[in-house]
Length: 482
Image 1 (tube, rainbow, N blue to C red):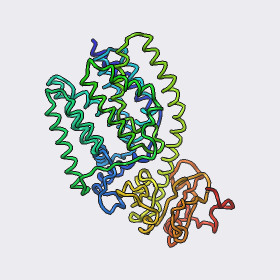
Image 2: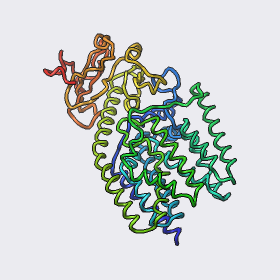
Image 3: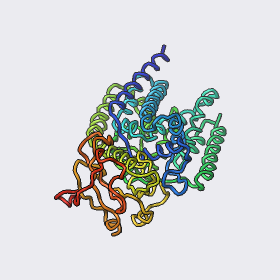
């Protein structure tokens, strides 16, 4: 009867969490499209070399994530469309796992509050942002619980997630966490865990050398502070850290979860997070935070203690994350819709071998399927200067902002661009025609620099489909609008 109650409660909470994530809608991050690019190329038989790369470059950190969507793409399933379903499934699984673990240790009512905190806006946004952070949150906590199981039977069920986690996170972050978990593992299967970890690391290193010609894993530094979640969700995160102190009865399990939390926080501080991250850098440790937070509630089983924590979480964490959510959603979706629209335009306007200069390595290259020069350097393994980008003689250069806007604007590029940009390229504001069906809102304009020896649009595009010659001054009377 109790097992049935656990499953029903877990299923109900999981359904509520998945419903909230579904209703939130897409929250795409540009960097989430980088592994999807690799998956798309893999599914179409091009291997791990992206269009425009002169050799294979490891621009991702999760080989299993790429292989998963590459396999789905091979079944003629669009990666970006199926990602939402994958994210929701992983999120529901994370909630169910946490409910069952907390219930088994502390009882039914204690399982409700920590798992409820997984419904905070930054966590739910990560479900819909296209990244692998919820995948990492799930498998890191499953591996941490599994390796500390004392019985032989539990070992046989939970040791495989450790191997999956090692293969998922090919960089230093995954290796450090995996080695630590193997050393913390229960003596009955510690050596087995160490063999699994070292075998996984060896497999990753050998494959990296065979495919990319390097032993070292890439490290990607984001422009924003990776510890944003500490002040976005201070009560939730503080409960996780305090849970380390209150977890002595299950000290080995607590140490494994604490290791995930400590290492994850350290790497978040080091590598940062992407623009409009909304605490994304710490999402991989939120499963561990949830289980650790349950120790705080279990330490004082009074109703007053629970009400105090609930009140604090609602007044601080819920209140401020929900207040920030609309601005974050607007910024992310504006960036995504502009990038998707421009990517579709580039796919339609240019030939398969035409190279384009972009400022962001994600959605525009994914939707355009055109070779790009990525100024961020992520797709090339090193930074690219504007002068070096123009040395490739690209057919077009995109501005660093307002790729698509509601009015034609002359956008000034940053001062580090050489003079030959203006000498060799014309800046256009190309009005979208409804027949193109690239964006859902009209009227809008595509802002782009096109090489002077090329027409604004291809000659074979009929005039009835929008191939109208631009005016001498396509921007109208307002020529300066930065």
